[in-house]
Amino acid sequence: MSQAFESDNKAKALHIAYYKRHILFCAGPKCCKADKGDELWHHLKSRLKDLGLAVPGSGAVFRTKAHCLRVCADGPIAVVYPEGTWYRFIDRRSLDRIIDEHLMRGQVVKDLIFSQNHEIGRSQ
Image 1 (cartoon, one colour):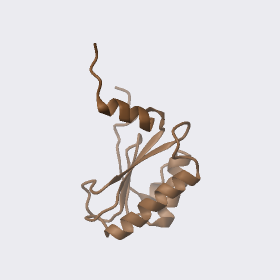
Image 2 (cartoon, one colour):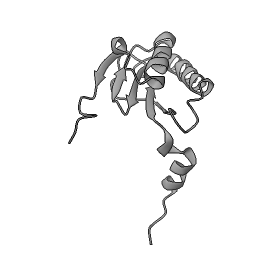
Image 3 (cartoon, helix red, strand yellow):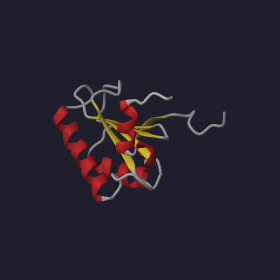
Image 4 (tube, helix red, strand yellow):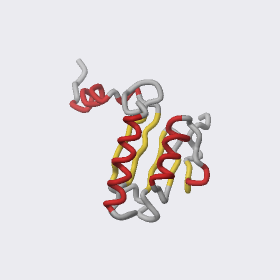
């Protein structure tokens, strides 16, 4: 008999298996002022909802607010998976570009990245 875990139920309730991308968004306070991070976090949530990307399914984006992604400079900082693409200096305009270009169309916004996981996508 397998053991039931509370996390299994929460994952099912959140429909985690049905998201295409995951954005982790550092809202400070170490990499940026917390009020700026919170403002942009709320903008991200609102845009994803307005675009229909907050609902699990085709093209959906799971979002996580973090208080530290360990970069602690030049933020807010965001990382998008599964590509492992790291973005810095996020303001409303650049966040909209990340949403429109990367989260919606799968195209990395090259002029905004500062690091990218080179191991993702390689055959093992």
